[in-house]
Length: 497
Ligand code: ADP
Image (cartoon, rainbow, N blue to C red; front, side, top):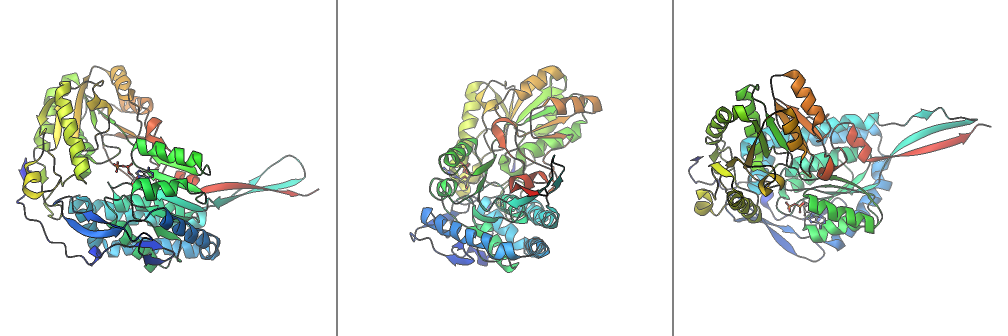
């Protein structure tokens, strides 16, 4: 494994000023006065401190969001709201270098990924939903009787949005842009590990002219700030992306409070199926991206690799050779292709699975332990790891690791692999590599997952829906489908008799 020389670029960013909460258009401290550290996962050092919001701050943010929902935001014309959302996209692009640096410092992802993927995609999502603002409308309904019946498509109201740390800015965009396009106001809680880019986005949202209180940002912890948001009686909808176990807590909080409408995008253990007739180079590329992109911290990671037995040796040789070229190092170095895990907890979780995999009898054919960079830098680096000769009943194949750990299983034929692929609690994504178009469509239809990639992996577009089957959650983000999460329909009857 190549590791770049351990020289960490000093952060040069103004944004590393201490973070505050954004409530009602003002940057304020937490009511409690408490603060917590934002850490650099590549060094373990403190980057800056953040306001630790909790219930009292969430209450204020919800009040501000309610006032904006009933006031300034509702009064704007659709074309005015459209222009503002487009402007947010513009501002993200204008500041892309700076935001990419914030993202890589805070999350540990390689700068080439934050600069080329996360940041431009976030801008694109704002622009895509800007287009929808002027196109959301109801219908007239041919009812029986002397009545005129029509529907209005109205916003939900105040929306709570809780996001994870793996794509901090992008997840904020996925949440905020459609909610705002539908006319809602928002209280966003970024993940405690990675709040910096959301705070920068808050500044850009104000700069784009969105009225005060339309977007409020509460930094803080899940069990306090997050729980207060999901239990709040004046939050009309809650949207969450994160672990399945946390999603359950969000559902419970919703059930025990005001039945706010939840949408959940949760974990995965996505099957990636490689048939012997696949173009091997394409399959290697897709498999590699599917598991190692973003340090494997991707909910739709192709973490369960199924290789047709007769192609096993040739495919694995190519895959291991490709993965051995990963360059781990300073996330701010443009040559780095893999950074650290986001946190110490996450690093330890991944390492515990590496140990478990061995105990279960899987064979590590690449990596398999802590990276030597972790010792040298104090950062949270682990070795990218490929386990071979695993079976689908191992915990290694059943539990979401959320790290650069691939579990390889072999299969005999389509029936066998569809059965094994679907034998999981999750259903977020799946992939199939084959040159046989019939096989591709048969398998795509048979897999129980919200996204199926054929001869590719990790392709996204703001227009294409994304979300889970089974315990990977419900509700679809992106595309026109997402508008359903953030609108409700009113039926109006007019007596013509
Ligand atoms: P992870 O354990 O990998 O950090 P989580 O699902 O816990 O993933 O985190 C995703 C988001 O959910 C974060 O913003 C986190 O603060 C938030 N969160 C965690 N616990 C709760 C909770 N009990 N209620 C609401 N939000 C929570």
